[in-house]
Amino acid sequence: MHADEDAQFQGFVRARWAHLVRTAYLLTGDRHDAEDLTQTALAKAYRSWRRVRRADSPEAYVRRMLVSCNSDRFRKRRVAERLTAAPPEVAGGDDAVSRADERSVLMAALAGLPPRQRAVVVMRYWEDLSEAETAEVLGCSPGTVKSQASKGLAKLREYPGLAQVMDAPGPMSFERGGSR
Image (cartoon, rainbow, N blue to C red; front, side):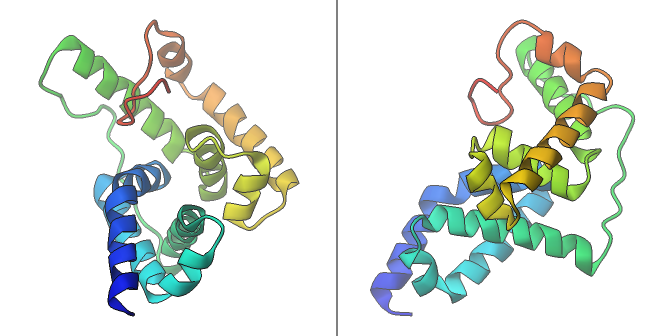
């Protein structure tokens, strides 16, 4: 790779790292796994950076790599997750505690979804991708996105405690700082 391409890649990583890790976190449910997943996807992107940077949207290209790497993670070995009945106590003010509780409920609900439904829900409702964009990222048809989103949302609606969190006053700010 030439020095200018290397600099372009480094700039891309600096600009998009946090966003990619947040997306990976929603896919994996674990901060460390999310960082590993992001590093794996970026390593693959580095090896093919010429092709990635020529894409219409390098970020979308890398996002698809992220989803593919996450799928590969389950194919190579089953990851045994051990969920606890209650999240660890969090020090801080009431607002920080309530955000942590909300985040814990959402992450537990997402962890209960099959990987494909989880990926569709994350891409559609966290990343705000259209059905067509989500289908492109996941390598499936828009109809599959619709059906997987419908099934995933139905399971999330049934998750105990998630409806109360969503109906609570005030915006939920799951690490993103936004209104989700």
